[in-house]
Amino acid sequence: MLSNSVPSDSTARPSNNDAALTPSDNAVPQANSTSANAAVSSASVPTGSSSNDTPKNPETTSTSASAGASSGKHSASGSSSGSRGSKSKTYTQAAPNQAAAPAGLNPADGTSYIPAIWRWITLLTGGASLLIGLNLALNLIAVWAPIPAHTDASLHGQIMTLGFLGTLITLERVVALRSRTLLIAPLSLGIGSILLLTPHPQWGQSLQIIGMAGLLLTYIKLTKRDLSNALAIQIIGSIAGLAAATLWALGAQTHTLIPLISTFIVLTILGERVELARISLTLRAERLAFALSALLMATSLALLAGAPSEIYATNLLLITAWLTKHDIARRMATVPGLPRYSATNMLLATAWLGLGSLTWLLTGPLATSSAYDSIVHAILLGYGMSMIFAHAPIILPAVLKLPLPYHPLAWIPTIALNLGILIRFYANVRSYPTSWQIGATLTVIAILLFLAASIYASATSNKQGAKQAAKQAAKASTKHAPKQAATLSIKPNDKQTDEPTTKPNDRQGNEQKGATR
Image 1 (spheres, one colour):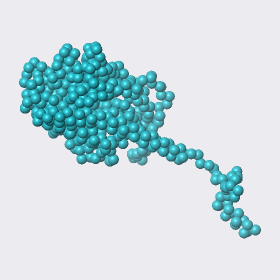
Image 2: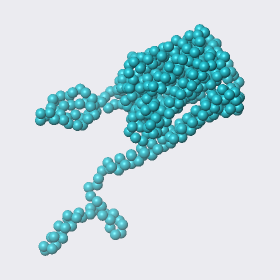
Image 3: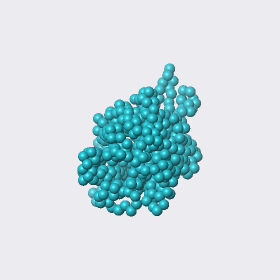
Image 4: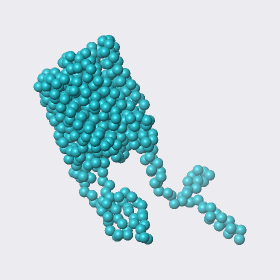
């Protein structure tokens, strides 16, 4: 949800992070033009989201005919070039007798990769956390809920942030790292959130701490590939998330932890946006983003010690200004299809972050603010969930090896989400409880619609892909079928003979012989 280098393949960056969303793994038709595809690359998964962890064997050898020796470089070119009358030719050749890699290892470099089944299981725990959180939300706004809450409905915030968003972010990071061991981190966050509803919530709280610690460790391991400003920003965000999980376990109230949770979500996404804009960013702009991130972490801790909330809200506004100026989403909004959809959600997310921060600045501490609900959901729902909408078509294919192409129906959840937050925001200001319930319910419906639209797009894409694969296979078999040496003739009685038909040239020769006789 979630970058150490600049985009190259489909979604990865050509840095030391060798994670990539390559066409061979996840070739999903996302847009209808070359420029659209380029823009999709810019909206891709943060920090080397890995889909390049499946075994790939093509090793090639480049040989120079003029030099008469192997050059030692891998090449896939069949072109030739001449210099002073000599010709140099490169060709590809499969590596002979390549040793099979151990089970679970990438034969290219020996690193481990995570089987799809474990990715699915982990994602399902995050999905369960989402559904539980939405059910608790319906209980909180006092409308009909599928399951009446028999526990504290205020767990809604903890389950949605650490259980759902935390699981998605951590799973993507672990897949990028290609570490089976650290898969325990996202699993702990998802399972821990579910266990919060049991008679022993401390088990769930402990698992959430383990999960956030695992996310921090994952980031630290990623620094061995490339320690960039973008990755450093995300490390700061994970520290904030770990602090929030720990304080929740120690009994802290949710409203006191909103700054830490906001820091976790805001900086995780900010680090990704810094990475995606890295081509056009100056080093000064990157360092400014890092400085603002460090300051945001410091002010969130200062609020726990009683510092005025205005300093934190001001810092959020500065980050909003940075995103507005430097984010590449503005340039993507003109490209139709997925790029425009992703860019629109990103720009809306930035707008909600700015509105929530400004309201926080004007209304003061959250504990006594009448706009508490508006501020929290503008930042965590408007900013956080809009970014999920924007990146899901790229994150899910990279993580799950599952196509999720763009479909125009995706705009319906986006419109419903933003309309619901807007109604909720206005109803809070005007003290309209019924309108507030309508707006809050609409946001829940929007998220469910997003899940349904994603499942529909993926299912239809799989069917179309299977049909296209069958057609290509049939075409290939017809094209490469062995040609018969001669064409068989059919007699009037429709019985086929074994004698080949007389060729035109032979017929003409026989006629000429008859005329001569």
